[in-house]
Amino acid sequence: MKPYVILISGQGSNMQALLEDQLPGQCRAVISNRPEASGLATAAAYGIPTKVIDHHAFASRDAFDMALADEIESYTPQLVLLAGFMRILSDAFVARFSGRMLNIHPSLLPAFPGIKTHAQALAASVKTHGCTVHFVTPALDGGPIIAQAAVPVLPDDTEESLAARVLAEEHRLYPRVARWFLTGQVHLIDGRVKCTAPLASLESAI
Ligand code: GAR
Image (cartoon, rainbow, N blue to C red):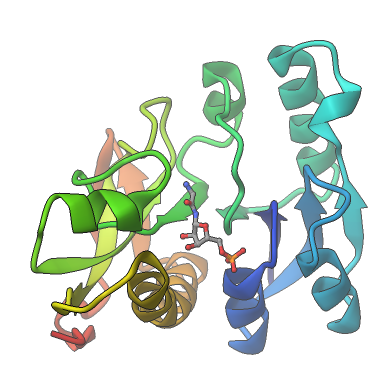
């Protein structure tokens, strides 16, 4: 069973979707940078060890990143899953986990990187929105894309209704991609995604 670690900052609904999926791996820890993250209690209810590395306790981003990376490494994970982890990570941190760290982002990248993606999508009047799972590289939300799921933007959508539609797709997409990685069906080779999983099997909500 390949060991993996999940990083969260908030409610952890993507984390829960990953834990529910009974992936072919062992979740060794859920780590949050925020002590008040409600996902910590959810993880504990699943019997997963939890750890808080509070970024407020560190004098610099580099010091926080170093402590976080050391904590992650202590679990010797083959995969690190960012699941609503809302911290920008330094190049040195990202380099330590190159090719074994994934993120889920609530937009169809490269559209709408950063925060408030659903507001950005509504402001741009796009008709299709969605989510992306990608390898993490130093480029913010710019790493090689593994898979995406799309949803329609409806005429009366609010940020909240659109976010809920996208989040439901996130919960389907992320466990699938994590499973591909843990079963050796997706790799990062020379900066490019090599995926042998049946991408065509991903149904879209469109
Ligand atoms: C999710 O929509 C996730 O894609 C997003 O935060 C939310 C966390 O929800 N992540 C980012 O915006 C990362 N840049 P969750 O805590 O319920 O999984």
